[in-house]
Image (cartoon, rainbow, N blue to C red; front, side, top):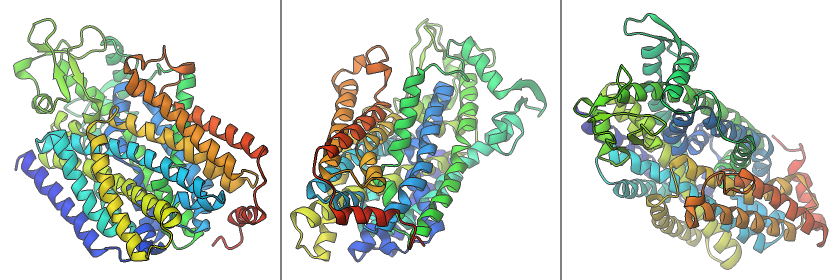
Length: 567
C-alpha cells in the first residue's frame, strides 16, 4: 500500500476508536462532564494528563525547533518539563483538595468575589483559544501533507472529530480517549526515533545515540560523533554552531520562566487533577504523568539532531554542493505541494542548496521536521502513516482538553455561578455543549490564521497563563493576606500587559519583532514572565491598601494547606 492509503487507513481507525470511546463513555451529568465523576484511577489519569500536556507543540514542533536552532531550543525543554514539576508539587494537590470543578471555581471562592471568578473565566478563555490555535494548526499541517488537502480543510476535519468526543463524553469521554491517544502518539514518536538511531549510530535507545559515534552503511564507526558532525555542518554552511546558543541570556531566562510558570497555570492541565478520587491520588497521578512525559522529552533532542543531519545531507548531497533539481528526493516535492517547503534557484544552476547565509535557496517550515523525518530517512510507508496518526493524536488530545475548559468556563463559571444560578443540572450540561460548539467555530478561525509556528503560538499561551492565572492560584493557596481587589487588579494588569506586548509585536508591528525593538531584549515568548512579576507586585500592593481577607476565607486557605485528610 502507498503512504496515502495507509494514512487514510491508520488515521481512520484511530478516529473511529476515539468516537467509539466517546459513545461508550457519554456523560450523563455535569459531574461526569466536568471531572469524570472524580473516579479516574491515578495511572490512567497520568496517561491522560501526559497526552493532554504533550500537545502538537511537543510532538510536531518541538523537535523541529531544536533541529533548526540547536542549543537555543533547550529553553522549551527546560521550561515545559520544569513547569510540570512545579505544577505537580505546588498547585495540583492543593486544588484537588479544594474539591471543585474548575480553576475559576477556586479563584471565585478563594477571593470571595463573582468578579474575580469572571476575570478568571476571561483569562482562561484567552489562554485556551491561543493554545488551541497552535494545536489545530498542527492538525492542518498533518492533513495538508498526508491527505493532500488544504490546511483549512484539515482544521475543519480535526475540529469535527474533537467536537464528537468532547461534546458527547465531556471529561469522562476525553479522559479515556486521551489514554488511547497517549498510547498512539508515544508509539508513533518512538518507532522512527529508534529506527533512525539504529541506522545512524547502532544504538537502539535514541538517548544513547544522541551522544554516540556515527556509523557508515556497513555498520563501522566513522570516528565522528553526532554532535561533532552537526557543529561542523552548521558552521560550514553558515548556521550558528549547533551546540552553542545565540539568544541573549536574559531572554532565555524569561522564556524558560514563562513556560515553567505558565505550565503551572494552565487550566486544562490543572483540571485533570480534579478527576481522581483523593488528594493522594493527585500526587500519584502526577508521578505517573512525569514518567510518561519523560519518554518523549528525553528522545526529542536525539530525534532533532538525527533529523538535522539527514535533512542537510539529503538537500546538499553527499559532496555538500547541492542536489540537481531532477534528482531531488521525493519528500521535497511532496512537501513543496503543501507550501511548507519552497525552493528558489538563486544562481540558476538547477541545484537545491540549503545554508544559513546568502547561498540559501530553501525555505523549510520547522513544523514539518518530525512528520517529514521518516520520509527523509526512507523508512517504511507504515511508519510514515503512523507518525501522521501520532501527530493528530497529540493535537486532538490537547484540543479536547482546551475545548472542555472553554465550555465549562462559560456554562459553569459564567452562567451557573454568576448569571443564571437557578438553571438545572440538565440545562447546565446543555449550555456546556453549546459553548463547546461555539468554541470550536471560533477556534477554527484562529487555527487557520495563527500568529506563528505551532510551538511559538503555544509558548504565547503559556505566557498568558503565567501572566494571569498562576499568581492568583499560588497566592490563593499560600497566602491568607491577598484580597479580592488585589487578585483582580493583578490578573487584569498581568493579562493586559502581556497581551498588549504580544499584540504589538505579533500583529500590529511584526516587522519590529526582533531583539533590537524588544523591551529589555525580552521576546514575546518570554514577556509572560515579566507580566507575571507585575501581577504579583500589583496584587500585593493593592491588598495592602484594601480591607483584610474575611476570617472564613483565611480558614479555608489554612484548610487547603493542612496535611490533615490529605489521603
